[in-house]
Figure (cartoon, one colour):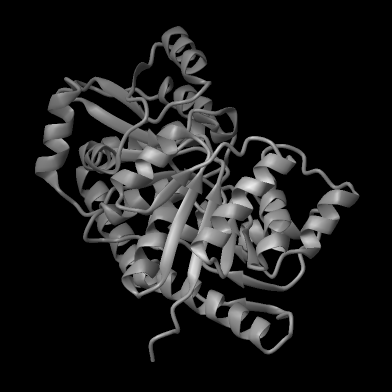
Length: 379
């Protein structure tokens, strides 16, 4: 039975496209295909442009503060969209959403994200937490992380992992070869790829330190980072000091990052993640993955990849070298990785999870109750 159409606004003040932007675009497009009205509000121009490239309706608003003008701007947009729900990305987005939601009378959903900064826990934030109708967690790890905060969020909790379109992210040798050619990376090079925002929290320095210890016979090793960010100069300097051949693409679109995965002999993930879009995308492309045993990545990888202790550079180097020296093992692990995404983390399951959550919350408002408890909509 088709759900009654609703109007959703997604608010993100993220400065980078990877992570939240990727999954929000999938949610917005998937719900729109099911007849719901969706719009993203972005704070940064390059993020707004990335949503446009994904055919997602987007409005760019200057919302870098939590003041009266920002609340008024957001409230006006909610009214113009006749929004039933606003879903917030960051703690600041949540504060703006709750204040604007009071004026527009739409429900506020907080998609809790990993916060590398110490959370604010003063009275104001606790009051904002009470304005939440529902909180969605992308993994068991991030739900535990939220429970450790002193801020509590009202309403019902939902766990909805990310999903991946295996038609878009799929093995493609020709695409991988073309990507290598564009970046002048030899077909004979051993290529290790990481993707994500170049920030300290992603711990890309772990990858450089590990690859400096990898020794290969008759093959040159190249480490490719897909992304941009404030750590770029530091990473270049570290790689130069340790003798690692490093290539950084800068901000990269979906086609580009898909080409990078398909060009890779192995994908390396070194950060503590809320969920790990990079991990799921690489697995969907059938790439063998080495991942630190930290954050939500073990939940995504399961037995379809190699998990190593997060601060053991020798173990990380050994795992990568083992893959680079064994083509058959790469093939077996890559095949298992794609199968896991197809069976456990499909995009249809994710979109259904969000649709069910929003329908549930709106039904509760119609009946005059605030939903309580928790629900696991997809696992």
